[in-house]
Length: 537
Ligand code: KIV
Ligand code: ZN
Image 1 (cartoon, protein in one colour):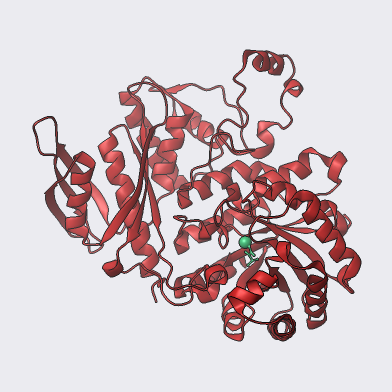
Image 2 (cartoon, protein in one colour; image 1 turned 120 degrees about the horizontal axis):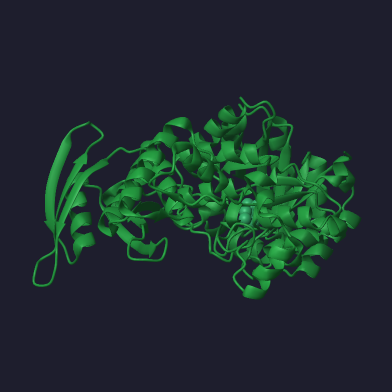
């Protein structure tokens, strides 16, 4: 196939996506997501911002090494500001990849030059030339991004891109950093670059859009129609503020409307739902039910008139087949008498790819649930699968909780945990409510100062016997050890001081106090594994 008919998919879930508040991932989670992204067929994985912290550096290095074992590995990119130290660190992190890339950037809008960087346009041009050339002296594949390109003077942008090409950039990525442009404007910007930058035919033009006005996908598609052949996207559209362009939306638009675009990607669309679930569970970023392609309602037809039409012919209301994105309809209703085989085929149909050892644990949980519930719904199964497999390494393990509460009683909890040293510890606490007392008891044992910043609970199905799913976020307190210092992950936007990461955790159980305790243990374990990996500086 002619390469000009291919749109390269550059996934930045592990870099821009991880910058979503609360989406912090530990190294194992990043590795697992990277493996799934490779299975999905992305062309480039931006694995992180290596200079941001030792933990980020190590994660990029591990992803570079790990994906190198694959038969057809994706390119692994590391982000770097246009500064020698950043570029060296990025190169150190990606150099073991079979196909490494350095992605360096410098702002080009007058607002950023004047107020953030405090440099002139001339200095900007000089720095781009020097730093792209330096990156190119280390790595044959160099991407350059003029940050805030969407608000930059096009004539100046052409000059910057000309300098970057002469210095050896192989991909030029145009970011709409603040999600300000409209599709017509962004399309015209890409067309202008195509028409006015000398040597542009020898490099790939890329688009990187943010979703502040809800236009990221539309802007990215406009860029493609005007010559972009790489798009920078994240799974579920996660990212800074309102997020980045969502991978699944762009890929499915190209796939569903060949008459309009006439372009292909290397994506295996049947892996989309699986990838979406994995990223949602690990980042704690819940996908809204009406989210295009991957939301729970994306393929659900509620209105009678629609259901009738779909039954007569799916084409009446269905523009994509659920199977195309990895949802296979299974008519099985599961309950007490369902066997392991039926259960596992149901789980696979829901888009999960369980390892053998996980399958055993999940099946055990399913059987326990069947003792309490007559019919187990898909949502129950999703909740227990997420609860069992998408969890951080268990440094502290919940062994037992007991709570007493009620009117006229002071809520009291007794908790038993097994620590990282294998020793079992028990303590009790009084709280303002049952969950508070459990969390206080856990804090007395683990001694990890943190603040609970978010707590949400939902019943995954209707009915009194529903499974409860709890999602929480915690933030380390100053002496809690997980505060990141130095040059932080989003310094390219803020240039500010230390960034406080928040950590999400989730838990599911028919007993909502147990689900709450599990969610708290999950967030604590995640926070501790990130610190252990050296995120702290
Ligand atoms: O949004 C942005 O400008 C970025 C760049 C670093 C590419 O994420
Ligand atoms: Zn961005």
